[in-house]
Structures are given as C-alpha cells and as structure tokens.
Length: 303
Image 1 (cartoon, rainbow, N blue to C red):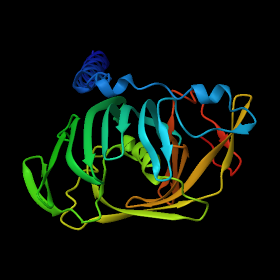
Image 2 (tube, rainbow, N blue to C red):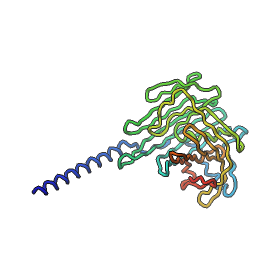
Image 3 (cartoon, rainbow, N blue to C red):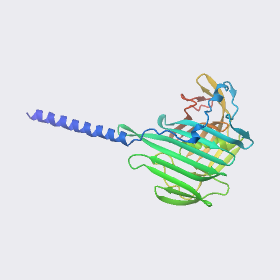
Image 4 (cartoon, helix red, strand yellow):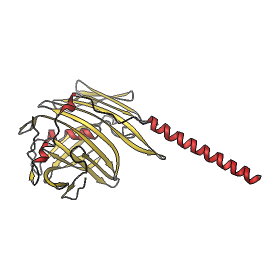
C-alpha cells in the first residue's frame, strides 16, 4: 500500500512537470511572432541574379541593370535581398531588405527575426527597420523589435538641425551629426548599404565614416550615449568564390567596425556577404537569395 502511494505521487509529479513544461513551450511559441514579410515599394527592386548567369570563370561587371556607374559610385541603384544570419555555425535569424540610392539619398527598409533558445524551446523575436539618409547624413531612422521576456525595443531617430534626436524606449538623447556626415548601423541589412557608398576604391585604398550604432539583436540595444564611433574600410584583393559548380570573382573589403573586424564581400554596389571571426566566435551573414547553399572563397572564407 505504501509503495502504491509513492508510485501515485511520482506519477502525479511527472504529469505536473509535463503540464508545466508543455504549457511553457506553448507560451514561448505564442509569444514568438511569425516571420514578417517585407511590404514596401523599395522591394520592387530587381534581383541581382542575372550577373551570375554570365559570370562563370570571369569577373562580373559590377553594376546591375538600371544603374549608372560614375567615378564616385553608382548614381542610382536599387536592390532587394534575403540575408541568412549564422553565429558559431548556428542559424540565429533571417532578414529581408530593400535599398534604393541615388546621388544624394539612401533609403533602406528591412524586416526579419532573431531566434534563441529558452530552456527547450526556440523563441523568435521579429523586427522592422527603416532608414533614410540625405547628403551623407541620417534624416530618419526607426527600429522596432518585438521580443518576449521584456526584450522588446523601440528606437526612433530624426535629424533636428545639426543633431540627431534618438529616442530609445522613451529615453531621449541628442547626438551631434558631424559636418562630414555619418552612417547609421542597425540590423545586419544596414551593412548592405556600404558597397553603394564606397565608389571605385583601388586595392589598399581606405574609406571611413562616423557611425551612430542603433538597433541590433535582443540585448544589444544599450544606449550609445553622445560619443560617435568610427567605421573604417580598406579595399582588399578580389576573391574568387565557388558556389555549386560555378566560379566568380568578387570584391573583398576589410572592415573595422564598432563590433570588431570583419570582411565584407560585394560586387559593385551589390552586397553579398559579411564574415566576422574572433575570440567570441564567428558571425556569417550572406545573401541567401543568391547563394542558397552558401559559397567557398579562395581565402579560406567559407559561407
């Protein structure tokens, strides 16, 4: 009789644990927003896949149909893409973006999600981002992260005279905009703007800009304060990459960003990939719409 009571107690405890864990998983999934879809006029930009068809075993031309290349970079450019985001070999998110630039203005919109493990469930945090820059300086920026467990973040920024007014979760600061202009780094899609700004850098040439660091993964949106940071880029040697049975020559840039060193791959104004490795692990972001299975670079950079 005593053993039977013990068995009943154990069974009830196990059932209770199962109900709690199961309910927790359901709650996690319910608090995880669905994958967002980019709905913007900017997303009507043409796909850059056309250059892949004629690029096998030869360098690509560097411009997309509908753009015009000048000595200082593309006078006009439009692109839409899908990013795969991996950290330490594990997928942590995805982001769809659309860019439109001309000689004076840059517009970027993106939507995406990050995912992370909580106990035995995978939780998703969705975000949207919008950026406009005129004459090399940001005029407006917004970033909204919908995440569970108190990690949601809302960032709104707008130019007011010579300063950028930044509101983060209802806390506002004013940050001076340098006379030479500045960039905004938010989610990973904001790096996709860089190739259209670099122009015709020769190997070894350097490019730099002040940056406002806004947005990012859950837990990475701490207030920046009033001190701007600097982004530095050096044109490296071209890379020969293999994807499937094809070989293509693309451009490589060494990037020294506020988050550390990295390599950016591009073809003309078209962003292709971003790789960062260091003591804290690796981060790999690439154009999944162009390279669904990734690619291998001759310089031992594997995407």
